Picture 1: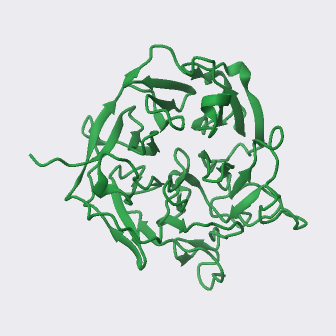
Picture 2 (picture 1 turned 30 degrees about the vertical axis):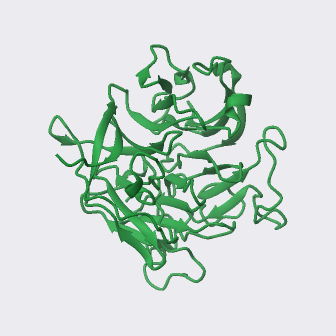
Picture 3 (picture 1 turned 135 degrees about the vertical axis):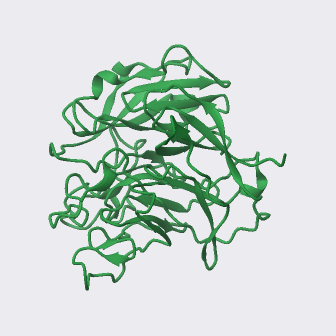
Length: 387
């Protein structure tokens, strides 16, 4: 059964570095930031720019909030590029580390034929708008008409390389999963150098560069649907929320410095249990999640970020995550002995009496963390203030 990998493929990760920050405050809260978007799916800021926050709508419009106010004209309108299939949409945006100089940014979307497209665009000199005609294709992956597991996030890593993770297409729990196929990008996390060549070069230290039969872009493998993942901006640790198939949602983790070539286990394992086969699966050498949870008030993990902002010092080092169906906010901190719960669960906001669906988290330039709901509401995660 292909749970909700459709709308939102997810990833969550757990970290293993010891935090020395003060203990967290008693509770968290969701502070309203904005609303009225048409199926908001992601937020992000250009590096070093504390005046701008981009809000991505699934339908293809990306809006700019500048100095806390949404501009009347879109930053860019890509709606003509998507909308032709059941999994249509613009999923995420990433800004080049030197965006302030070169104006380059990258967008992942599902095109009008239901295929995966990673493209580069260029902002106009005012940085308040961008031209869709500036598009340059970086990666293109043909998808079957039955695909529901597209992945969804593009981001730059601490090393300045561009990372992107594909979901397992239409295979879900099927024996024909691509996630372990060395000749396919599907079900893998890729690592690209978009500065060394056009459209990109393969970094010489990618793990499979010299291995025959392997796609050289592959950095990590064995994912079902890594919808949202992130690097800890403080230390480079990697957190990946991978959407489950039947019963379990998982948050995977790799501590920095991270080597390529790790296998996250799909479809052999779902969470830390066997999936294919159901008993006696191969587990040797596989990455197992430090955090997982069952499909109880939950259906598809929404991976988040480690809080590294300045507004709430006690919250630093806390990883925040959610679930598309649950809508709640949960958190933990990684220690030398594993993950430790940080704050009590924050209940999901309600819309007309119904649980709102948590689609994504995002960071601004200052490291403050936002949570994005399908209703078009954006919140900032904060410590609750004593009354």
